[in-house]
Image (cartoon, rainbow, N blue to C red; front, side, top):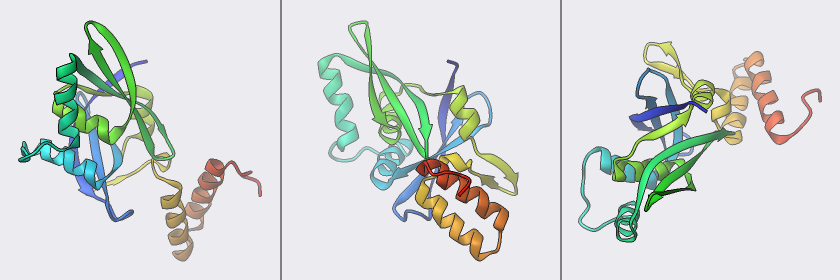
Length: 186
């Protein structure tokens, strides 16, 4: 499995849900980007590190490196290993006395910790290829249909029907049915 190293490209608010943020990760050697929707607390933890802001007291993500340092454990890398229905799954790879082990993690927490440990972030070539944003020009990007939640698809379906964009509506309907395990011929 080929790994692709990532860096943070940008982070912005999203419209739905109202308290979510879009964290855009970009491959280090290339221009492809993947969007990860994260919550506001994780966005705050990531943004603080991006701005090099040190809070007066350690926050939750700040405690983790302190604890693991006392235990002799080091975070070596993170890997986004799976993307399904708009959710990214990650592993934290640790080292203790030369022995490596991994722990499953939310991607938002994995990124927040990678910034604190100053360790590399990776994903697989397959995920990068299937989930990357497509440049539409004029600063606009399209998101792969597989990278959004069912709720967002249902909202987009309603809007497509209202605008009488029936081809788009049928594609959205089919994706929703596929995810719910329903027959596409109904």
